[in-house]
Image (tube, rainbow, N blue to C red; front, side, top):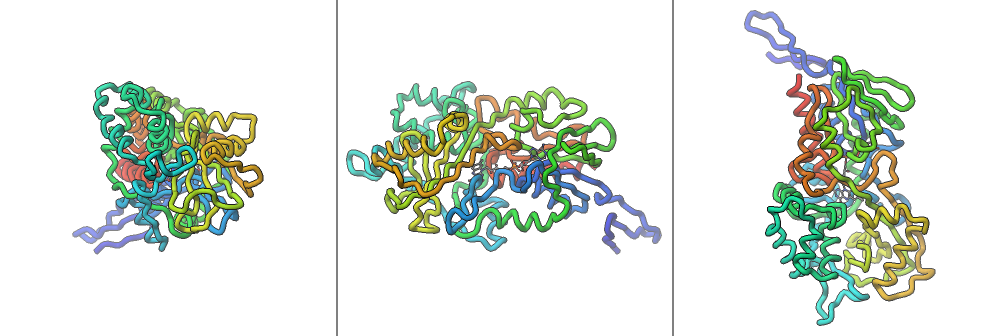
Length: 444
Ligand SMILES: Cc1cc2nc3c(=O)[nH]c(=O)nc-3n(C[C@H](O)[C@H](O)[C@H](O)COP(=O)(O)OP(=O)(O)OC[C@H]3O[C@@H](n4cnc5c(N)ncnc54)[C@H](O)[C@@H]3O)c2cc1C
């Protein structure tokens, strides 16, 4: 006979005496950070019978998943937008929540504007993953042996054209979240080799990522404490003590820290005792660059119908609402790395600089054509501090160290701790939650 009781598993032994096996439910876990990794870890822990509290610094959950409401007749994603890969827990969750997906075929839909046209000199449509660019990308493994080589250096040595640099910045640089000068070829390839989610990309056909966060938020209910920035985690004693900025203190048997690596780098959380040296080195070694989305609504669309992605003179753009709202007159500038950093620090209104690039790209005058806009600058988010972690030269081996638990009671999750190639993604962040829950169970 097996009786499942709240708080313990009771097993009837042969001699009819009952032995109570302490199960996890008398264990309390504090999850620091209410992004997707924190919420998902909390949900899994709750299902395993743990008592959980989620301390989230800001006034909302979701972290780098956020929507812009009321700007269009559909919701606009200010952070994560694509469901990457056909084999992921995120895709499954999306479909389980009744959401429909549109597959985006970058080889035919990533059309590129160069010099005001999507056609090149031979009147051929310029596709983002053009043959020459693909060749250059494929040949990158030839410099794999040099761990310090950046993608930019490789392109210079390959005598790639300015156009190829621009296309590869959008194809690879923006995708992984930094400049080609800062991305290590070896680390990039290593990550790519580990990627196991499949190569298909999807956009939501209706709803938004809010429809995935919403059910999680409801399930976790009052276990989520908003406006609770954690300022210290003391793991010196048997029970951990977590303090928030307002002076509140929480004790727990285990703590899961899911904050972005940029937050750890800024020392916004004091760990007592100081984290082990190898963990501190890992924190410094994993880089996270600036990133922003500039959403712009125009009085009319001035791009061709078939276009989804536009590689401008300086920035990359997406047609927002593409295939979902065919008449959409909204463009999103997707800007990563030093270009995002310099816009973020500029005195000039960001949208003015971006409009200038659009004018140069399309060779048109956009004065008075912008109806509305919104800038989401992730660098300026006090509890995020950038876009996502990227493969800088030599960085990838540090992810496993960043992820490793300390003293069997302090655990680390979040996108930057994914060491199997899925960092910088939503499904990757969810996978780190699954890993951390397994580690907690094993640590009993
Ligand atoms: C512009 C952009 C576009 C993206 N596009 C995609 C995409 O198309 N597809 C995709 O799969 N992924 C995409 N991503 C990446 C994806 O959004 C992230 O990998 C994922 O959401 C990270 O989740 P996380 O839980 O690890 O971290 P986060 O979402 O950053 O959550 C961490 C949480 O910790 C909180 N926090 C920080 N400090 C403290 C503290 N001291 N105390 C308490 N709480 C704290 C933060 O407020 C935050 O809520 C994109 C990201 C950006 C920025």
